[in-house]
Amino acid sequence: METRNHHDTQVLIVGAGPVGLTLATDLAQRGIRVLIAETRHRGEPPNVKCNHVAARTMEILRRLGVAKTVRNAGLPADYPNDVAYRTSFTGEELSRIEIPARQDRVTDRQQPDTGAPDTWWPTPEPPHRINQIYLEPLLFAHAGQTPGVTILNRTRIDRFEQDGDGVTAYGENIDTGESLIVRADYLIGCDGGRSAVRKQIGAKLSGTDVVGRVQSTYFRAPSLIKLQKHERAWATFSLNPRRSGNVYAIDGKETWLVHNYLRADEEDFEAVDRDWALRQILGVGPDFEYEILSKEDWVGRRLVADKFRDRRVFICGDASHLWIPMAGYGMNAGIADAMNLSWQLAARIHGWGGEHVLDGYETERMPITGQVSHFAMNHAIALQKEREGVPAGIEEPGEAGERARAAAGKALYDLNVRQYCCAGLNFGYYYDASPLIAYDGEKQPAYGMDTFTPSTVPGCRTPHLWLDDGRSLYDAMGPEFTLLRLDTSVDVTPIVDAARRRGLPLVVLDVKSAGAAGLYKEALVLSRPDQHVAWRGNAAPRDALALVDRVRGALPMAAPEAGMPSRLPAEASVA
Image 1: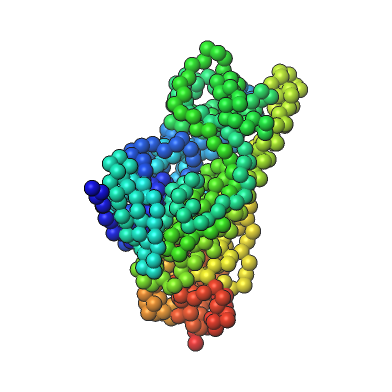
Image 2: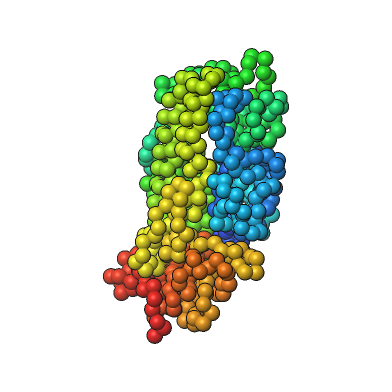
């Protein structure tokens, strides 16, 4: 006789990868009950992928209370995070992008600017190199210890139904066959590139199905680290006429991941002899011994779903977008999705979020997803051209060989420093057409992969400051909305009263920082829970209730016709 296991929760998350775990932790810290359904066994490792945690993600992990744990894991503390370019892993070095080891990162003050491309970041949390096999267990443990989070391993969700009050999901325990019913207010699909949730809501992926194929091998070789002629590096790009690829240090001791980039006519992962290609990339002979731990072959794509939501069901991360893993932005963009959605869901569930608050997720995140996916694809195409155009004499001795190596090294450095030191992708993106932001007519500054201009233009990231008392601005801000006051003589009572009337959680922070003058031109800046600017001005707006209704999602985007401007004046006196 069939038995059924019933669960009631506020949010059901399908998938316990980094995106689902971070989303669950954030929701729970906002007072939301969360259940995660995960098909893998508890403790079962993920694939060996995503070697980079971006600065914006580290900021999120700091707020969730797990950044220090994550930063203390991964490569050894003194292991250079550099990216090296060589004729082979054991060959001649062409150039090197210097990136500090984790022992040289600082998180309690501004990172000293040494002139290297990855030493100055406008954040309390610079990026961190750690493979997902080490990162995910830390996030899993932290989520599991967070009150309000329940994780069901070996659990598959097969289908779901929606009604006006919630979602009913049906699944089973994979090991026992026991049926499962989950009743939730909302369901979030964080179930990866083959997402069953995406398929059931009718979302379709479109874009470029194949940008490139990579024969990827995870292996153990304790002797390899000592065969190098040059200083260690987190990533070593091998460029020679026979084979080009990337070698990543996984544990900094004996485990490695090699990407062998297949050529256009090599359409099968076994089209090239794996052992031969690996030895060409490493520059080792037939006597070199290694042990294959797993084959991690993958196809680079640029695919984005045509919708991220169907009523009470949403998709995040790889479920909504797939692209070549340049700059580590698959996982990091997924976590950004999750943090955008999390505060909006919590607002709606707690009752202070208006009926349009959840419209912000797709409206804000879909354009960013498209932008980042094009950055990644275009960079991958440029790299492919470099691999296909290896100078014939790059390995030759003498002056001609030196010239070839110098030219190749400069070209590789100039091309790749942008993706490995990608401040623009971290801090430059903005939301320019959101129903949750009160715009004032000023356009947000343009940004590139590695370039951006800090700005308080609504929709931009709230610029980070180190306060005069030594704290990070982000540490001093509240978990929900924070009204930053740069001039204590400005009366903020109308905004505070309006927030109280609508139930919008708000704290006022008087900012005292020597660095504020160059970044904050207005006396007041309203920062959202995801640290994007919702509004700014030199005085409270004439209609503070209208402002609060705008940022909490009580007003539709087509507000002018409804009698409420979506773009509030930047400067308005109190009536």
